[in-house]
Image 1 (cartoon, rainbow, N blue to C red):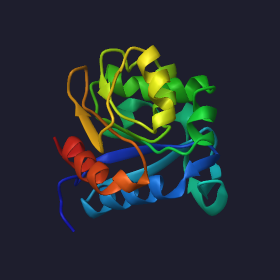
Image 2: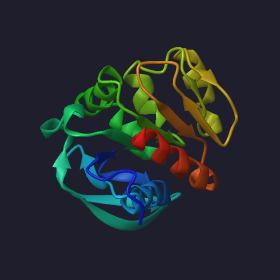
Image 3: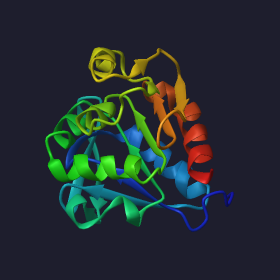
Image 4: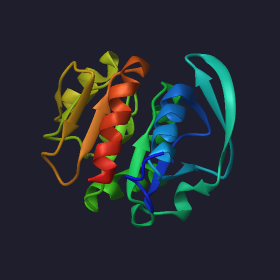
Length: 184
């Protein structure tokens, strides 16, 4: 185990259901292997149902509700994808405010797949270079982002470091850049 993230607390923001499991578990493991503390935050405390695409997978326990925490409590934020997960989060004002808080505070954020929907709602992607699942491309462009089709994009042209990736196949590159951004 490395120690790049020793004493760092990283929030993983997810909805009660619909998170793409591997987009939660692989970055979570990367944070822990780098010595960081990963905390699952949701819109309510309790069980979170993850999915493998459209098939229910494992459940996880969210120990914190988004309305009881703030960006000040953490050193960074990870937004896993899945279609239903960010679609639900973007309709929850507390989740949107929580995500926006990391940009206001200049703290790193990492997002994958459909996850940028939450950031679009937070109005924090304007002028940022990003990637995502292809179907989110138009939404990001309409929100003012510079969308590119790349495995992983690290954008430092804003108030914080923003790491983005397209899909589960990109997770090795995503996790490597996530750890760099969080240790920065």
